Image 1 (cartoon, rainbow, N blue to C red):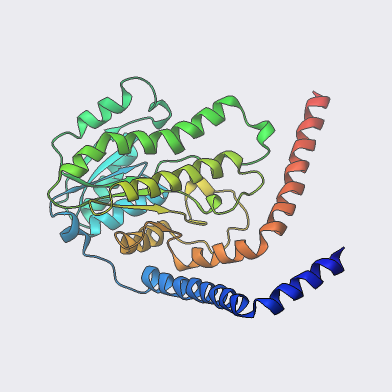
Image 2 (cartoon, helix red, strand yellow):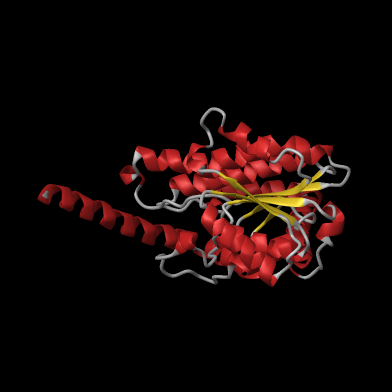
Length: 322
């Protein structure tokens, strides 16, 4: 059977050499074009200077940042303050927000205006919550929205609790969607451009065992950002960021954090790329991480499955003893 197929294939090639040559050329050209595109994309993201953001989005304007007292959000608050933006902190812990505001005024610019809007993002889908938040920002010239808030859960899906799943959906999907909906009209009415930075994750790059809910929610972030970027092209700069390991409280206790970067490095590189791309891994170390993941995803998932099976077994034995 296989011999007959190969003979017919040889016969077809012999009779259609010109067509086969054209198809081979187009295939090779496609590979070359993609390769060149990847190289040019890397140069654009990592080597070219960024825009002067305060001129692009407006002097005296505000950057609204969710969950910015720690981690990547704090990195964005610091880096945007350095560029001259006033800040709106959308946070749960007001005391930590006041401490960060004082730190920024002392070390970066004492004249920066910093507003604090208290919010528990677990409740953002409750009736009236998002309306109350947006009302507190009325009258402010908000030019940048950084949707940073998120929660990480990982492990065997069967062991997730309903409350964990609901919390993740509210914080990773609900908060990003509702804050964007609440502020997009203000951004579009401005005379100058506005921008939205949506934090996704490297975990959305490939399905990885044990990250079903987290990676799934981050895949939503990518599509949501990409679709809005097409819808408002030329009017808003929208970028989805898929960072790898960043030194944040969310990743404390995680082992083997490959090619980790600081929160300030993460924010600094993304702000340099803002307005020039719509989807990024951010720092060059995380582009390398993505490449290594691409080459080793099967091994990663094999090891993850073994680990998850061990966790389930331990949990089962624990219940049996109790």
